Image 1 (tube, rainbow, N blue to C red):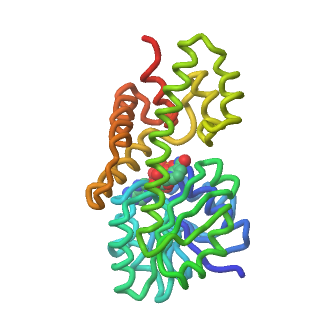
Image 2: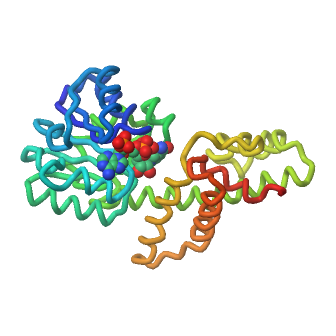
Image 3: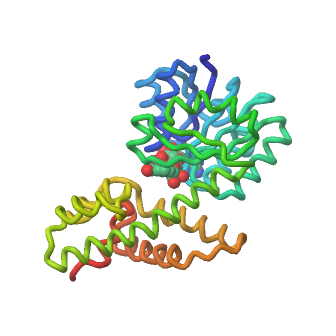
Length: 290
Ligand SMILES: NC(=O)c1ccc[n+]([C@@H]2O[C@H](COP(=O)([O-])OP(=O)(O)OC[C@H]3O[C@@H](n4cnc5c(N)ncnc54)[C@H](OP(=O)(O)O)[C@@H]3O)[C@@H](O)[C@H]2O)c1
């Protein structure tokens, strides 16, 4: 059933996600800090553009957001022009930003004070997943609130799963990023080793990707790593933000993340080489011959 919804933050991810909501027949209002992107979105998809998150959130039953980090999120949620100030009783704020579990719990508490609901719902699948409507969405919150939002989230999701109470979506996304960090370092070392051993890297990948070493990263990144192509994909700056969140959470739950901490430092070296916007597979650059 068509709903009145709002989308805040029309970046690489938010722009196509909001587009899928419009394509599914929902009445969409948008806000973006840089207004030209909101204008471009309305020109492409129709709907309504507003100058503040509060104005965009007015009248919506579901308010979605996808901005950069914890502080960006706070700046669109709180205050007179923030989303919570514009939302009507019973409405749900759904956050797709990759942020901390702590900020999720904080905003959920602030929302509850105004009789509003909150779900943390970070995504995996990248720009391609957002554009194709095939994201994996990991959600934290109350089951009845999740049930309200899920059919709408399904407009851009291949999978949308409730993981537990508020914060559980972000914690699940942290597990995702921890797994990817170590895996990419292993893949970098393997590809670099193949090159130095004089093997045909492409043939190596063809063979070993049929066996136990197979991974999404191998299927989608090994060949571009061998070619030294990194000007696309998931930016190192974003990965460092995410690993910072994981390492901070590990301090509170006691998990040991020795490899993740090491790979985080490798990414700092990639940044120092000017690779802030390179894809996360650029770790292999640090192993290249000078
Ligand atoms: N890109 C990926 O492959 C990917 C995959 C999974 C998860 N994510 C996560 O999804 C989130 C968004 O990523 P993205 O790639 O879409 O980033 P992006 O292209 O840089 O877009 C960020 C969006 O947030 C807005 N924003 C940032 N700070 C703000 C502030 N203080 N106040 C208001 N708006 C603000 C930006 O507005 P302006 O247009 O004005 O700058 C823009 O709309 C991040 O948390 C990222 O980690 C990204």
